[in-house]
Length: 249
Image (cartoon, rainbow, N blue to C red; front, side, top):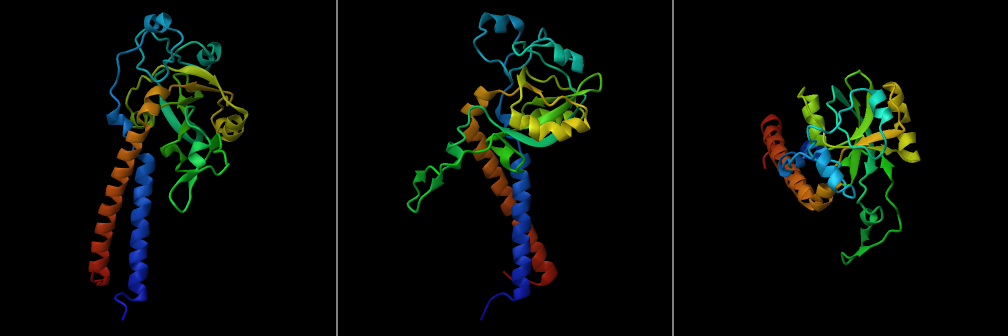
């Protein structure tokens, strides 16, 4: 004799799916970098000029780093000039680019029956709009509002996005003007058109060096926290289902 009726099984399955959805959403939005990454010493122009071969994108901006306040300011800089800005607002585009240090073939590997990795021969897309892609291997494009109420594309840690959304005054990290690929331009064209923003260039402010070195740690913290959310949500839902539907476990 079956322990649960069809109705009870349906309720329990629905509870499980709701718990999975909650964990998935948490996994997507949780940013361990916000507390794992310590703010480094501000990087000023003197440091940059001392070693121009090094990349400084994503580093804390020193007081003498030029600030851009308008779309004209952004248009006038070259791809080798480090700048920063204080955005008045931010818009998520839902478009993501593969992080520069990620091997597009590495993340499409599969496992055989013995658990060994093998190449599928597939290449991960450079640009995607998949909702979970930003969690590990991809970085989202944002539209940031400048002081003149114009918008430009930018890429930086999601931890900054949350602060901007909360109304905090945020000095974004050091960034460079980057030319977007044809694939990125095509994907961003519509949403950039809505905000009268140029889809040709992006202000790139991501710290790829830190991101690459700490990717596994960030993933494990995010995964562990999402697992905790899943079990906690499932427990609460099952207890609620037990009281409301009279299901005995």
